[in-house]
Length: 110
Length: 123
Image 1 (cartoon, one colour):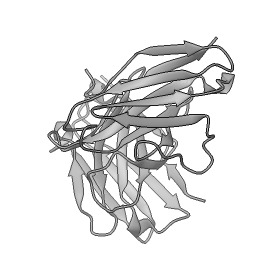
Image 2 (tube, chains in turn cyan, red; image 1 turned 90 degrees about the vertical axis):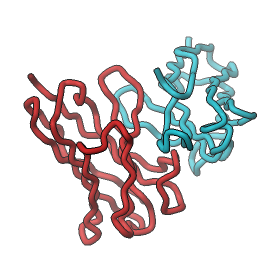
Image 3 (cartoon, chains in turn brown, yellow; image 1 turned 180 degrees about the vertical axis):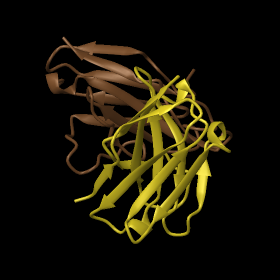
Image 4 (cartoon, one colour; image 1 turned 135 degrees about the horizontal axis):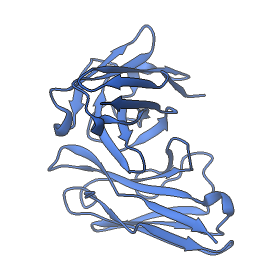
């Protein structure tokens, strides 16, 4: 059971916009920044969004992050086949004194 | 460019120990923490801990306290993770990651990841 809650799966067709949600509590998302990671099949995770809504250099602006209260969302616009991957949210939890991850959302591009 | 290269996969017997290395390049090793995250087969990501190459300070997840050692060699710009008393539950891919700015443990900002080191614990 993950500290952060994500829907197990999401899907969309090419060109569509998809949103992945991440729910936490005051001790993690409510008090600390959220990060999003993309893990393509068979590869290491890659940082997609940092500090709630900022994109590292090289990440397309089709990817955007937001945070409100104890929840965060990752939106992917103009869906492409290469976006098919697992997406994880993460934050620091002050009570656990640990970095915590969501269980991951498997995105399928139909 | 920033690069993290990890040691090769390993197979260990139950009760043994494993040591994973993470050799970095392309940035000032002393200025950023190294995080360790593992992923069991078909499962999600699990944070193991953090080490500061600057002063050797570590922060280990409660689950692994007493079984994990995290060290760094600044001359080799390499970080090490050692996990002892292995069980089948420790079968996983172990990742190191360069942390984001701010040399402190309280962060989930894994900026650049290594390719991972698969560890299999056989009974």
